[in-house]
Each structure stands twice: as C-alpha cells, then as structure tokens.
Image 1 (cartoon, rainbow, N blue to C red):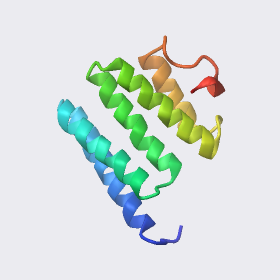
Image 2 (image 1 turned 180 degrees about the vertical axis):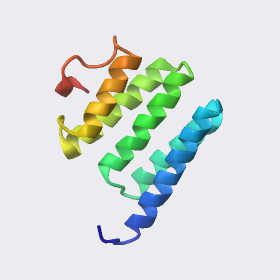
Image 3 (image 1 turned 90 degrees about the vertical axis):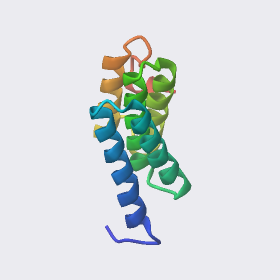
Length: 119
C-alpha cells in the first residue's frame, strides 16, 4: 500500500494508541485504557482514517468499557464498530464476524441475532 498524504503515519499513530490502550486494559488501568482508545478513535475519525481501522479502535473501546462495567456505552461502541465495518467491508468480513462474536459473547441480550441486524 502506498503512503499518500500522511495516511501511513495516521494509521501507525492510531494503531500505536490502540495497542497502548489494550496494554493498559490488560494491566487493569481502565481509565488509561479508555483515554488512549478514545484518542485512537478521535485521531482516526479526524484524520480520515480507513473505516475498518477506525472500527477496530471503536471495537477495542467497547471492550474496555465492557470490562469497566459500562454496558450501555460498550454496546454503543460495539454497534458503531459493526456499522463501520459493514459499510466498508460487509457482514461477511473477518473483522465484522470477530466484533459480532465478541459482542454476542460479552452481551448476549444486546448483540444482534442476525449478522446484518446491527444498528
């Protein structure tokens, strides 16, 4: 993939923030994880990042919010991630199935029953 208009740098920065957020989550730092993941999402959205990359950060933010016990906020993030991936790559994509599976496992009463029923 060719780097155009700083997109490679944007993708790298978004990924680094996302990975740092997940490391903070693994270390039990919920506040730090949320802050880093929100920065990752905001940076990707503001910089015109690829929808699937943004969705990956949104999905990880949903995981952090779920781990923090903030179920309604987590569900909103999972739904947003599903929508972003569905619009870019479709319901059959690997990332879509991964997010949907985690959503269904973490919050069975909130996850869509059919893959393309996500909001």
